[in-house]
Image 1: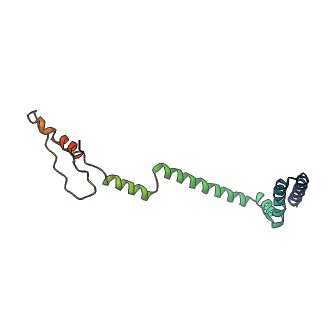
Image 2: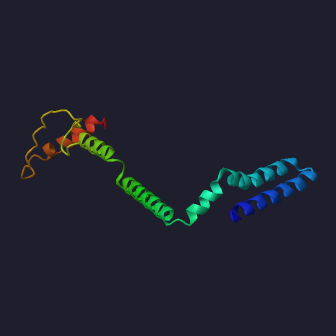
Image 3: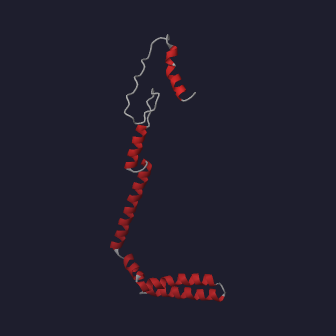
Length: 148
């Protein structure tokens, strides 16, 4: 009952201020003040003020706000963890598969693009310095491949 009276008084005062503002020929500001001052009156007439007063003193309503806050906290926590990990599970799986498909064997002269090709046998490490020019043949092949 008191909330409705206070809201009605606030609306009446706001409409009075709007009338004074209109008298000073500031019609746009007066219309805006009148709109703001009619909001509390509309809330009283729709019953929102009574509902708010009942809700403010209800322990069940406050428990509901607590549950909503907990749900929001869980949602935000999962979003932060998801961002830190780099996306959803499906996106991480696709990224891992793409990384595996684009990997190049260190001694390969042609990148493996996911083809089921048999890898070339690795050359045996030769002891001694007799065939030092042969050791650079891999490097020469890589440089020729890249046009250097």
